[in-house]
Image 1 (cartoon, rainbow, N blue to C red):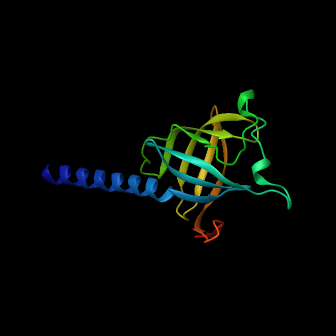
Image 2 (cartoon, rainbow, N blue to C red):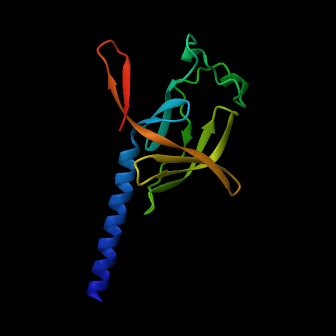
Length: 157
């Protein structure tokens, strides 16, 4: 009986450590399809701030607005600087998945139930769900260096 309790205790500690490691390892910069996000801790929850948007040559990324937002008062805000995560304040499970949050999609101005999953290859699977149908994309981790002139250089990890 003592051996069984010990095994359960050790397994629980390993799962807790894996969950903490997953959360700690997603904090940082991530390359998505058309932008770069910084995931960080914000008042006890994870947030994902848009720090760069890829646009055509000669277009100021700060001129891209949240024009599809359902709230008319937010439609004139720049996309750079907004947080797209909400409610991710739990812990990653043993499968390196975090559920219970929502993600804002600036492409359509709507928020969706969401889940995050740290993959074995180091990428982050970010999904939004409607009912039981989920879709998303893989984000790749970046190492970002702030240059002396204030500009940033990003390199895939």
